[in-house]
Image (tube, rainbow, N blue to C red; front, side):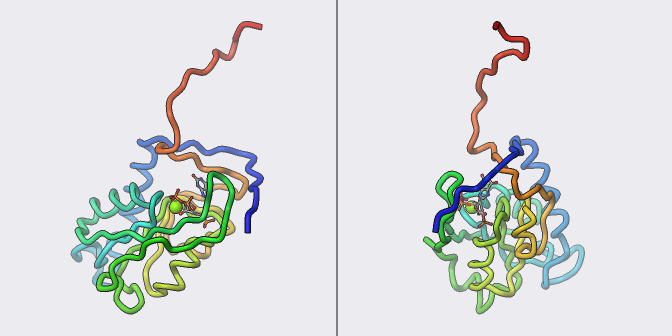
Length: 174
Ligand SMILES: O=P(O)(O)OC[C@H]1O[C@H](OP(=O)(O)OP(=O)(O)O)[C@H](O)[C@@H]1O
Ligand SMILES: O=c1[nH]c(=O)c2nc[nH]c2[nH]1
Ligand SMILES: [Mg+2]
């Protein structure tokens, strides 16, 4: 399946902004894990699993803030640029980390859009906690905790996909 997505708007996120928002996500998750309330090691979470590649930067910041040293990845591929395809798992996390159902594991991604990526990972680990920095309405019910919602017709541009470049002054030459 391929769909061309009709994005009207762009939401451009700087490194500063993703750092701030991922920290806010960590603070929101602190003490929410099944392993204990406020003050528990790792905020009550056993491990962090990043959905690569976009989830890796936020997962690093979350695991740093919550002092979680057990960090793994699940690789899910679903987009070629802005064209969506059926998501598939390319690399799974260690079975010992995930346990039978993912309980106590924090699965982190940069964003949820249609929710198809999280739907797939949720099916595999139904008791894991799913956290993203940004969320769009269509996928919101797939995520347990997020920081900022943007509209469905917004494309989020992350700093790792962008570069600084010259722009013409507003009052350019005719
Ligand atoms: O909610 P969905 O519609 O499934 O979309 C969200 C997913 O799409 C992007 O990943 P992508 O598959 O582009 O891979 P990447 O993280 O390696 O860039 C993004 O990082 C999320 O993981
Ligand atoms: O960089 C991205 N921005 C988005 O808005 C998005 N939606 C799905 N996948 C995405 N990747
Ligand atoms: Mg991704």
